[in-house]
Image 1 (cartoon, rainbow, N blue to C red):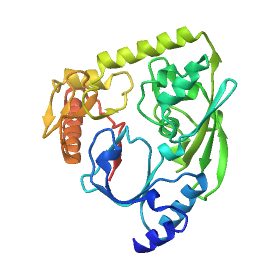
Image 2: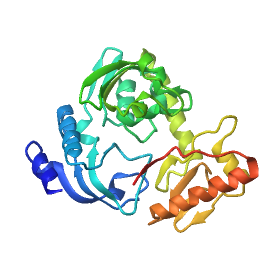
Image 3: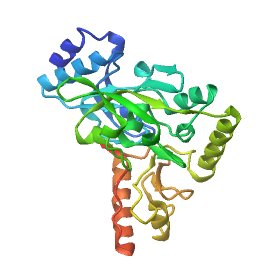
Length: 300
């Protein structure tokens, strides 16, 4: 790791490089051991340089936003975590378009839209993630999805080229896009919205927030919906009908409020969560013949 540190230090400041950082401090699950190196780039070219160094030194790297859909290993990460959050969160407004860097919070983009009477992004206000992650997974909730408002995306290719992709090139589907398929990195995205009365936008956002409070276990750390929605079913309903509401392994549990969520009751380990997930999948398959697929990302 000494060579990597030496190379990183040539263009990153001391404040931008951290060592043995607990990943539980960077994930909404509050789970995860130490990352050998964690870097916080400010500029797009820094991301490219960091990745090139990791490849030269044959070291693993992982891009992390707000960590809201990530389960990190108890052993941590023996490589370089590239944190795409506060340092890469610039947002700009151009008439009815908003351009946001990958680390911009969805809630902040939604508030900017509301303040300027722009509608179409209300659904994202309560999603605790970033633009980069939302575009990668085509995030959606209630009456909206990223694909409905996305105009274009600036990405970094595996070859180190920065290029623009239009919406129609993104292959946006249910929790998927071309980003993961082609190992691309989202740098920034532009969304196009419609003018609407601000009171209507505010009311819709308040309604969505209240629905989240009523239905989701927001009082416990989690990574959001643990499983993707199976065709023709709802994961939470299948898990509840399998009698697994409140099912617990260590300090990880199926939420009694919404069975589609696995929650951390306090100091749960990654192993607790993984065992619980496998038991849930096994039970649901045995009872209903439906194999659940994880929506959360594994960082190990």
